[in-house]
Length: 120
Image (tube, rainbow, N blue to C red; front, side):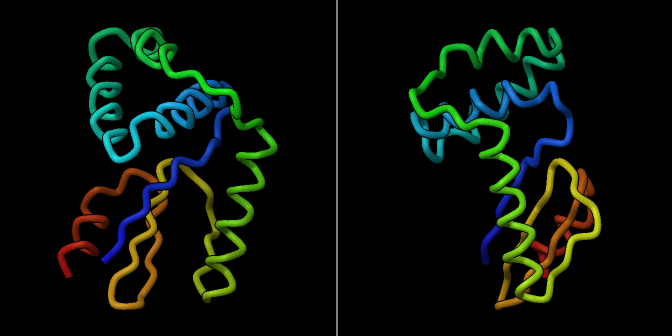
């Protein structure tokens, strides 16, 4: 089984956060999940500015542009469509769950559906 969480940029103000997260992933690898947990806690305590305080420490030289992110989203949608999995709506988060060769996509924070697909 494979779970891929795709955080597509649907709000123009989210670009800077995605750029910092790209750099954080390059530095942290799989430990980025721990950072995401920290960011959610920071949001609950102090909002977006608290998240940005944490994220500002992650910088890199190859920061993706808006076009880079858009091209990545288009490539994902094309790849899924070629496998017979069209997405009618683009949102964040998007979960791509691959289990026993079957691809399921959940758009939005539908936790119950994601849990259901993972537990089958």
